[in-house]
Image (cartoon, rainbow, N blue to C red; front, top):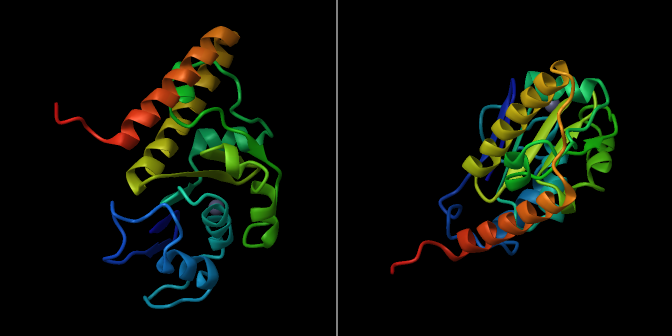
Length: 195
Ligand SMILES: [Zn+2]
């Protein structure tokens, strides 16, 4: 399943998609990556920005959903050429990790996926210079919540700047948060315990 949220919506789903979808490429996933630029069904045309979705699916077999938006505060950072990469809040380190800025690329061209590719393997959220935000995750709610988290973090960064500048977390504290995130992710993938 992929969902593209802006003025257009591109949505592919199937009864085969859901919690049981293997992280490995399924036939459906291969079809999406191979034929994603062609409209298979539906009333609306495939978005011109489908290329960035397909780049993520190609490079991240664990990703099941992608959200691309133009949220105002995060996009303002992208418009100013500023990544959201200052470790000033524990929340962002526990969710998406810090957010890099991909170089500007013309919307709807292969340039967009090329600008994202260096960041896709190690990040779950990427700012697109002078454009917007891309987040992805294990489900549509997961990808959407990362969008919400990044926009909230952008608001915090802006407010902290207006207040004279935040004090970044120390390296030792960042390391502890990264370890906690790894434990949380590991526990979540095992599912709830019955005991
Ligand atoms: Zn866009």
